[in-house]
Image (cartoon, rainbow, N blue to C red; front, top):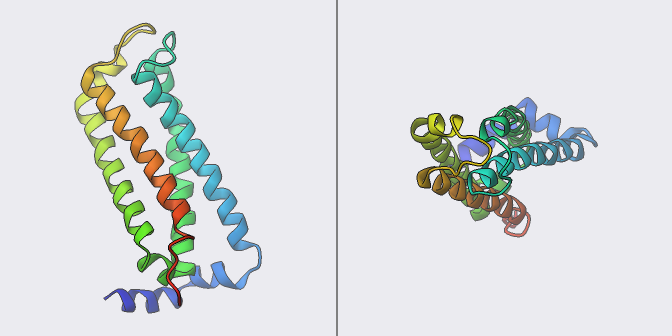
Amino acid sequence: MVQTSIEWLYGTWLNHLANDYRWTWPIAESIHFFGLVLMTGTVGAFDLRLLGLGKGIRPSDLHKLLRFGVFGFGLQVITGLLFIAGAPEQYFYNGAFHFKAASLALMGINVALFYTLEFRSIQALGPADDAPRAAKTIAAVSLALLVAIMLFGRMLTFFRPAF
């Protein structure tokens, strides 16, 4: 199954784009890291506010900036798919990629929990108010997962399969 997927990816236009043009990969990496900065900066600031840093700022005001984080995540998804299509065996057989993918899945679950359970109470907080304990827990998990995603993303090159 994995080998079939790898062979299929080698025949796609994304693989051609990633490998046959000299500047595609470095430009995509720059865009990927720009997206990482947008996502980490906005989500990180929001999470730190929920944890009690930056009192004096309403969480709802910081929440308005999360649209930039979503845009950054979108950039990362697009460029990440390009990377996978460009060198599929380097990702499919890489343990660091598996941990990164698992961390991304957990981050999605964490976001869903936040918007399902805590979002309404956060919107009502004033600049000096403390977030509920559950929101703080979700924010701490979010920050830990952001670090894990960055760590495993960086480790991709160190655990590259020898092909």
